[in-house]
Length: 185
Image 1 (tube, rainbow, N blue to C red):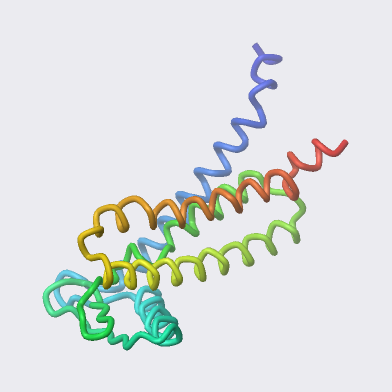
Image 2 (image 1 turned 30 degrees about the vertical axis):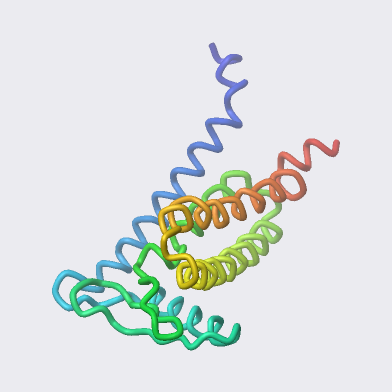
């Protein structure tokens, strides 16, 4: 039995690390969000507001007139492109939950300490940048093809962000993790 359990030790170690980091960061994020009373004041958290402002700046960079308006009856920010209300930015649009998932996986497959920390920081920044671009391009697509909203918002753009994260995971596992180190030997 002991020998059998040793066989599964790397997998069990991965699961414990993954769920510990994922659970801990999720609780920390929920605590952060609890400071914003969205049911009464329809207040947006600072991270989501920052993402909305960055989306506005990038959309303007691409030549679109972009305005942000606080929604008066829900916790969201309206995104208006060229005078058309095309989308709204809500807490889930800030990609924090995606970054938490990314971090949990990288830590569970950790490599050398400094390498792991550097990859976490660089990967989180890249995910954030990809997310801002994703929202901009989704909003531009919705401006031109509003009838395609279910496909664009529900399929194409989630595939982009999760596909990007999956790619970062593959790079990590194959080139930097302890698994990659064992593979080289």
